[in-house]
Amino acid sequence: GLRGTKEKMRRVEESRVKGTRAIVDAIGAMSKPPKVLVCASAIGWYGDRGDEVLTEDAALGSGFLSETCAAWEGEVDRIRPGVRATKMRLGVVLDPGGGALQKMLPAFKAGVGGRLGSGQQWFPWIALDDVIGAYHRAMFDTSIDGPVNVVAPGEVRNQEFTKTLGKVLSRPTILPVPGFALKAAVGKEQAKELFLFSVRVAPERLQNAGFTFRYPSLQDALMHALGKER
Image (cartoon, rainbow, N blue to C red):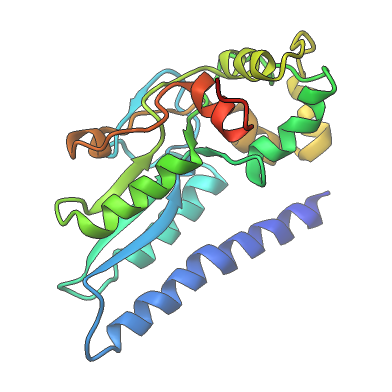
């Protein structure tokens, strides 16, 4: 209900915005501050953008997630002079132990998984191994600062993600989940912003830095995540 949604929003703000504020303030008070702050953010920054290709230079979107990411990143921007700071805008991380993939697996394994809504929305994803690699690169590569899109270069729409996950699990994916059903299950705003928004994100900054993705292919990334490598 509305009260539950507001409580989730409050928790998101507490953990992301206020947590980052505390770290930035602590760094500001240090006599020997660290050389770099690598902070998480999210592709929610961009909001619902259709087929627009979104590099790190794209403008802020609208909606709760965009506003939260803006406030979150705004705390990072307060970092004291001399400390390099990166804002890692994470896509959907393919981790079977948590996050979106974990929530999807039961339905897909049961053969009742399907595209969400129209299935035409862009679905930015990244293998967990490449998230770790991107963070490592951000820590030690002094040329990387500011926002960094942490997504794979193999961009796909939701319906292609659905088809590929079904193929890896050897399960049918013929039952689409209508938008109204998603909204009834998780709430109107959450359904829109987490599952139905179209966000075509490009990892321009990582690619310009020469970062090599271990899993640029969605099928290979899913097979690795689910322990089904050839």
